[in-house]
Image (cartoon, rainbow, N blue to C red; front, side, top):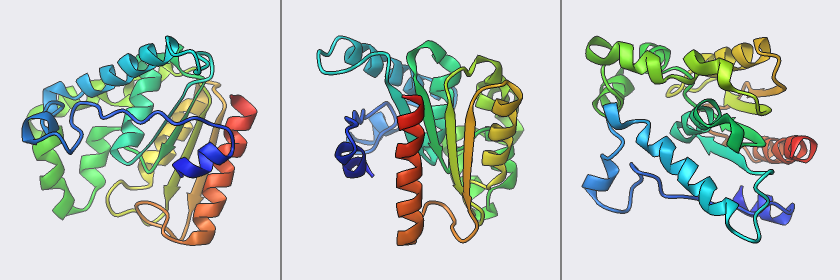
Length: 204
């Protein structure tokens, strides 16, 4: 996907925000539960760095991410709406409570250890969920998802699209009825990539 962006004239900036792998266990846990939004602050810091970079156009910066990165996109758009020209959310989490309620049983216990539990952290999880801060979104949004996603149910995509549309913000949705968590089929990937670039060409 990154190479496709580059081939179509878009530069790619890929930060290793708090919680990323590759820097040890302590770094990977820096955004656990109550520290969740610290990783979103790192996106803001990345944009501020780009704003001072001579080759970057500060008015045309896009947030793009998949799965947990999709949550990061939606949170970036709700927490720092003035920074973004558009957002692209791929199989992302829109609401931590509905995600944990509807994800596969085997997945829930794994995710609660990192994100917080429905029993103990429900209020906090609602508070930080993008769907509960939807009034802040002003940038055009493209949401892509697989109908058969066992990890992040497609209902996450449906609710964020409906909520953003109700705000009067431009939003596009692309759901693949033969995909799950990500796009494994070549033809679907081609369609998704070209659709994203088409969306960016229109709005950025």
